[in-house]
Amino acid sequence: MSGEGETMNMDMSPMIDLVFLLLIFFMVSSHMIIVKIDKNVKPPTADSAAVAKNKGGRIVVNIHEDGKFYGPEITMTFPNADAVSEYVDAERQKNDEMQVKSRLHLRADKRVQTRYIKEIVKAAADALVVDVIFATYVIEKD
Image (cartoon, rainbow, N blue to C red; front, side, top):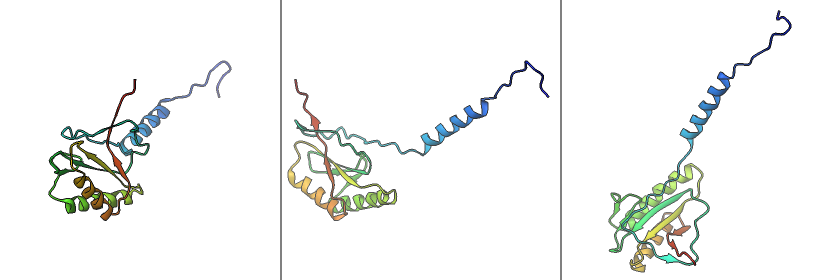
C-alpha cells in the first residue's frame, strides 16, 4: 500500500525505445528513389518543362550524342535497341511485382538524332512500357 503524499512515476524508456525501433524499421524498409544523372548527356531546354509528380517506376535510358545507349549507370551499355527492350522488360517486371506503373525516363542529349530517340521509344513499347518522360532543363524566366 502506498501512503498518502507519494507520487506515481511512469517509466518512459520502453516507449522511447519503441519509437526509435519504429523509426529505424521505416527508414530501412522504405524505397529511396534515386535517379542517377549521366553527366555526358546534355538534355535540351524547354520553356514549359515541369517536374514529374510521380517519381516511382522510372526506367532510365540515356542516349549520348553519338547515338550510343546507356542505362542509369555509364557502365551499363546497350549495343542496340533490342538490348534496351530486354532491359526495359526486366525492369517493368520488377515494377509489376511491386505494383508500380512503369515509365521510360528518356535522357537524350540535345544534339542526338531523332531516329535514336524513336528507336528507344519503340523498344520500350515492345517491352509494354508506353509512358515516356523526356528529360529537359527548365529555362529560367526573368
